[in-house]
Image (cartoon, rainbow, N blue to C red; front, side):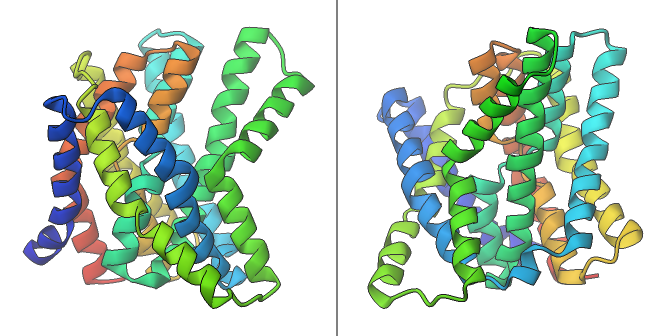
Length: 311
């Protein structure tokens, strides 16, 4: 446990450095936005493409693994939805809360951390998690909110979802990388060095940007944020573990990586979408802040458990 904590500590130390820089106003909100854009569109995309381009497609399109993560995530999504409905809040807020409870920071935090701690073979399972979050649940949120506001499902809504996926650089990096891998094309040395150099900026840049963004977030509506953080950090990995180990025949290493990925704190892009639609941004902001702080301990425990014995 201590050894894993010491390995995760540098990640959270960079995150803390970003928080301190923004809190002391050495790093402005505008600077944070630009750094996030660089990481999102360039550095992280280069890292993801390079990883995906070297994958074996059966490692990614492993049916039972996809179903295990999908069903585990869907179960906590439904749980958060039922609790929100029971509390009597509206449909739009319910959708946002479900998204907050189910979608983790796999892109900015999960990829660099899990690949470093669990080895390069972790990238296949991480891609399953990332693609499911972005394509399935990201689309589901947009569809549900748009349908509620329009009063019906329309082709325009589906077109908007498709356009959003095409514009998402992580989705495009995964897709392009898998196509490259599908044709079994080698990566030319100069291109590989370019991707390696650019992708190397993703880890420190993403962690610093996460920390800096947390400095602008508040911890209001703490009771709801604590509930959503509990679902995200504890119930989500438990649900994925149950689906992987009991319901579906998932390879042990793949299961361990997906469980660790499910233990990531709430993703920052949920806040961006909540702010875009004007639906409970403070609630999402609080959950991101609280879940990220708690994950310093909880994520270490989960990674230690799954890496110590791949079931």
